[in-house]
Image 1 (spheres, helix red, strand yellow):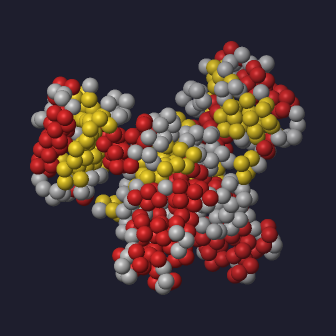
Image 2 (tube, each protein chain N blue to C red):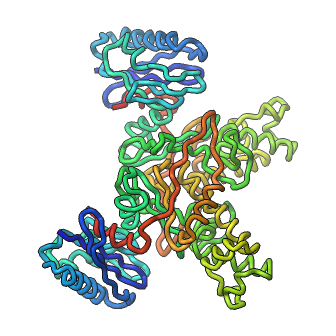
Image 3 (cartoon, chains in turn red, green):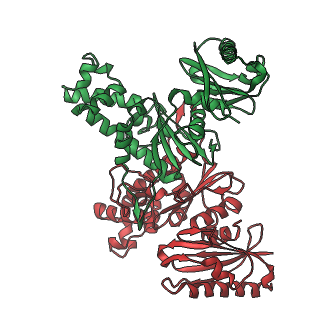
Length: 313
Length: 313
């Protein structure tokens, strides 16, 4: 049997055929074209599934399920995408719409949760009973797996790590509050910190990378210049990792998960990021030293969403 | 059948006879006498149980279980108190020792978890699927109930709220780190903030309460003077509640529990504390306003430990 995982992102819809064991057999993608009628997007998803079946020389009857990871709030019980802001979707009946093409069960999940499920089953947290995955992208996303299941909270809004306070009284956040992790620990924040450092140091390598325009500095430029020893970039990266370490540390103090995974764009800095964050979490010693969870990089990258969606149960 | 709950504190051992529904039928207490051989303490516990049975005119056969809440790390599987610093207990075989007196099952639990179990079953969080209880005492303690069960974490150290960072780079903590909630949100911290405010304002009502000695100011004096409008006390109480609100807010952002309970000594300030903390948690509004859990006072006070121990399963 073949499982289908669909990862609906803001720019691309990625569709993968996956084994029961979580191995990706084949994948296809189409532009999301956000703003189109949802039926057009569902048509494209069904088209990708047909394409994969053809490539795998399989019939529709070979499908055991279709899982869909969506960027927003979903209601799997009712088969609805309740609110996906970036897609402009409100109460879209995804299960019913896909059900018109394929007879297998259609399951829905939030995309960050789907990615964490994949990491927890076949990725960097495979075999772990509990895992918190922190995604360092445009914002700070996260998902919590406890005893192997997604912890959603009592109102479905658990894991809002982007709005945990890391700097009390700090920078204003879009949510109306201040000092949120989104403003200090996202890729967006790292880029902003790099731009600011360019202005303060003047001679930064980041400026050259950005063609002389501080406003064009990206998170990637900051980590690359920091790795090369650029003073301005090191200052920005140091601030960034210090705040990220506070966030990770607070998650650990509260939940004591078996593993904390760092994913998303900034995590492509790899061990350079990971080692810096680990070094900034001081030991907590009350008579005996508190054991620390493993802190690691997510392993499945862009495929996590598809694989996790395909492994929904 | 009668359940027995034993709450072993630093100064008192409290023993209660409890119904299956969590109602306290009778209770007895003896001084802990920490430092005595553990066998002497166990003798006293068994004596209290005998006393309760006599008062209830019941026979030992009427006991369905004995639950023990202990101030430290317990291993219920092996029936051991692994490490209870305040009692000077290392690997004490509590189950075997009590088993010499009574034939019913003996179950062990950490005391904070036991209190939370009681609040979750018959107290302020009764009927709630998830609850985080924060105890504001000498330190900041806590317990996490998810789907009705204690979440212990992967190393048994979940819920270390006292060592979540509330002020990055803040006051040094005994654990070797800085800015921990223990240093800002405990009763000890509130008293220290009151003493400091006395020195800065000079004319505080707290000073009179403390017999003119700033060092004698207690957490209770701070809340009482603040309630009466004393400027110095209001400043201290304001700082305290601001930090506590940060802590509560971070717990909510991460876990989205159904209810957050405030217990322990400082919570005796009642609505004066609760309303202040609630008012200091700003709404988080990302397109739609994030729902907030109920934030409430613990209801069972000193009886929570006994009742929760008696309800262990």
